[in-house]
Length: 384
Figure (cartoon, one colour):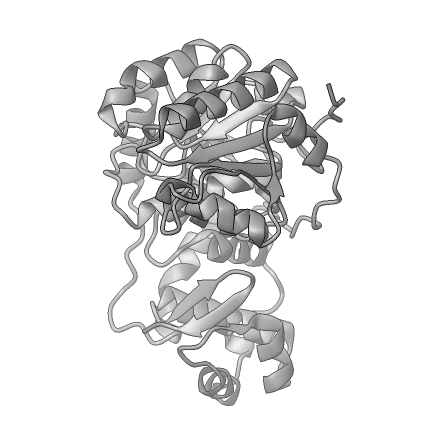
């Protein structure tokens, strides 16, 4: 058995006050505010409350044709009450229960809804994801269960998406050691419904449900790739079992590669279309695994992670640079440099020969006006 070093401990033990968490929730639920924009706003204005006050002016400067929709206090309170009725809670970026590795991805969710799992990530057990086909074979389900069970016995947390097939097999085999189910929709919309019993056992055995969506959110097709980036982001690596060439599991593998995580795959028969994706990944450099020992030998759980970008919560403090300091000529040069093809923010700064502060504030205005899209890693484009 390969000895596994501990996962990195959370970098911060701070806990937001109820007032701060309410403001964070209102800010991330406001129109055109994504995780990257949330971080920029918080760092610039010092608090979510101050950022909320600044949203109307910023979106107007960015060219919005109507007032920006800001999440009302009543709506945020309703969401908190809904979570409480599910015996769930909000966990903020930097709080002890927030998955440590997730903090290092591009645009980590500032808030996660979580049910169960108290202290799960603080216990320094390294997480690893196992995903694959919903319509898996009996052999695929058996292999996924064996790998998950052995990883759990070795001290790993198994992460998956609670789907039928491989996901369900991985969760079921790792219940006693702790497993994390990442939802595409809200925690109030368990999907698929026939996994309700398994989901209940996950929490009862000390595992967790996790989602970045409001509890009443019904999952749509576009929400599953967002979910998949969380599965890989929480984990040191992703193990794929029976993934077809055009499957959500391959999206998870792509996110893992972009996030600097290990990509591992179980090979399968060339005659089985469910194995095409795994075999192609192995051909392209993914680690071939047969059992849990292969996974533990390949995972680089001690790798150096990228430095955490700043996230400043200093109520009453505002960055000295304001939108009033940006000239109309600077705004014009930035908009003219942008197009529908994503470009790196650093490249944009060099091309326009403008300061970092000017470029970032104009991008913020454009995004809040609905005129800008962000793409990993740190690229932007005009909205189509």
